[in-house]
Amino acid sequence: MVAITVSVSGKPTINLDFANKHPRDVTIKELKAAIHAKFPKLIANRQRITVPNVSGKPTPLTDESKSLADYGVGEGAKLKLKDLGKQVGYRVLYLWEYAGPIFLNPLFLYYSHLIWGQYDPSPLQLTVRNLLVIHFIKRFLESAFVHSFSRATVPLSFVFRNCLYYWGICGFLIGLTLYRPGYSKQALDGTLLSDSRWINFWTVFELVAELLNLNAHLHLRSLRQPPGHPRKFPTGLGFGLAVCANYWFEILGVIALVAMTGGDIGTVIYLCIGTFFMKTWADGKYARYKREFDNKIFPGKRYRLFPPIY
Image (cartoon, rainbow, N blue to C red):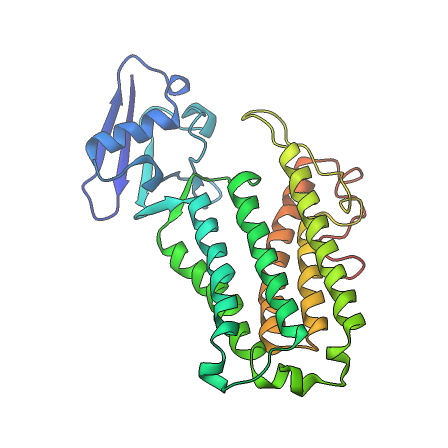
């Protein structure tokens, strides 16, 4: 029989007994179901279960297909449980955060005269609007049909946080800084920013970056393995130079918008914040790849994020 003690913050300690079972026969899914039976509000996705580790950092029991024994949990173990709060689907989170700019950004251009007064929109403003809408429609569709997620759900608070970022910067901020008389047809007349060759060059640059990013995402999707199978490393277009080529192409696309607009402050802020987060994610993936693969093969001499800088 397996007997486990689970301590829950703000709730009484509970004892769980799995009669006639060995730790190798009890899965994390069964453990979560037993906890749910004790606390009906704590559905599986709200539970974060950890086991103390000799290193001092608790080990989270995340893979529901694994057994207690796989995590070194034996008879009489003491586990800790944290309530993660109300949850929302990971895919739903992405769809919400990308849907906002698709509608908010064009609305700011359409109604910008209510803030700044009447002016004629320039080809530059109209082009950037179209490119931003295309960018986020692509992201929306990728989230719906291409991407897979490491977790089924995330805390509901993430919806407000992520929407504040994407809706706030790509919807409101760029809407305020770009859709104003300073970028109007009259203001840009005779300048480089009104030259169709300038606009067309950066438009093609941005669209090529979008296609390369899409190709990278499709390649990453093709590498998915069933649970328990060894992970594969990416080898597609761009991954021979950068470990996270998908982030590299993403940054190139935003650089095109910054260059096209002559450094619009809203797009610059979007580039800086986005690059910061992608660098953080790239560092994590780089470290994981080094642990999982022979470093001479992958990552090898590849850059992490943005050849030949980083």
